Amino acid sequence: MPPKSSLLLHRINHSGTAATTTVTNRHDNTLLVKPFAAVPDAVARYHTHSVAPNQCCSAVAQEIAASVATVWSVVRRFDNPQAYKHFVKSCHVIGGDGDVGTLREVRVISGLPAARSTERLEILDEERHVISFSVVGGDHRLANYRSFTTLHAAAGDGAGTVVVESYVVDVPPGNTREDTRVFVDTIVRCNLQSLAKTAENLTRRRSNSSDYKCCS
Image (cartoon, rainbow, N blue to C red; front, side, top):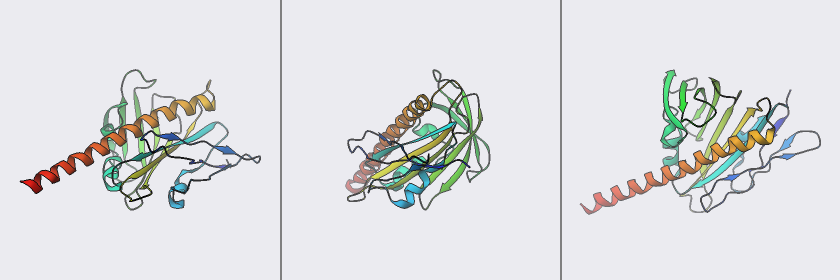
């Protein structure tokens, strides 16, 4: 049985830039999680994974100046990842009704080493604000990819949100763990930075609309 591997969620950059976590390795080949104080235990447990010798795992964290409810309203839409994932050209639900088990076919923009991906919704926890999906088909090299995304209120006044996205994936033949991690981290980081802009713009639009109604 592969060892349980956990991600060291070591910092969040408050300037709005996503911070990639690092992974610590013990002598017995198990990986330990040491979440920073801002990440609740209930969140950290979703980022503890079983990782086989031919796999790698990593995580990216992003703080967003928008409420958890606002960010979740974007993230939870399994049928509409292109709302903030700019590498996605289109998405079509090919099975299911939005609950766990729903399948979607995602087509990505040209320039990436893939054209389409078939993905299955694994977790959709509306109360804890957790969503997870796995890649079950497609013409790319990210075999056995599974992603976990959690949201929790940022420290302070609670007006902001911390998003943590971790993943496990097979290392493609001919690549190293580091090659794979750098490639996937870059995509996840771009997605979360785009999510931040999308959610913050949505917050501003709602605020402006509320101000207009108050004045009219």
